[in-house]
Every structure is written in structure tokens, then in C-alpha cells.
Length: 81
Image (tube, rainbow, N blue to C red; front, side):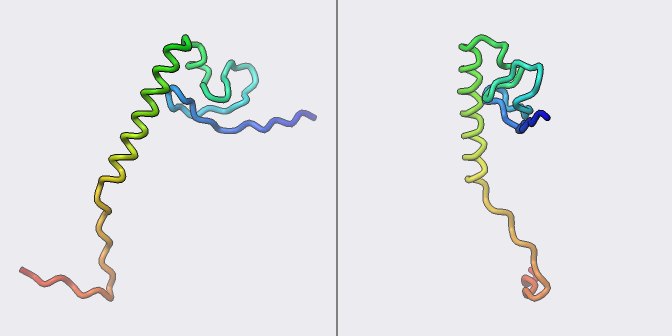
């Protein structure tokens, strides 16, 4: 009986989700089957760009104001102007 414990991973270069280990693919722990075929220099560039995009997305998320809380029935209504 063969035990396989495949896990869903995220490619460091393109951000795609993939199963690892998957039988019959060249995917590594860090790269999907499509990105592993790229030259190492290209993969490294994609990894840097992906990391930077993620950093910028997180920074934008932190800078956005929190959405207003919905009014509850116990809260008094704001005065009409």
C-alpha cells in the first residue's frame, strides 16, 4: 500500500497553486511544472517580481481605511441634516 501525502503549494515564481508531490510532473517544492522549465535566471526574476507585488498588495491593504461598522438596532440613528 503506497502512502502519498500531497500538499497544495504555491509557486514562488508565478503564484499558481499546485499539488506537490504529483506523480509524473517535474514540479519541485517551490515551483510549478511550468515554471520549473524556465531558465533559473528567469525564475529568479519572476520570484523577485512576485515577492514585490505581494509586498505592495499588503501595503495597500494596510493603508486602506477600515470599512465602517454597520449600525446596530441599539445604536441611535444619526441626526438628519
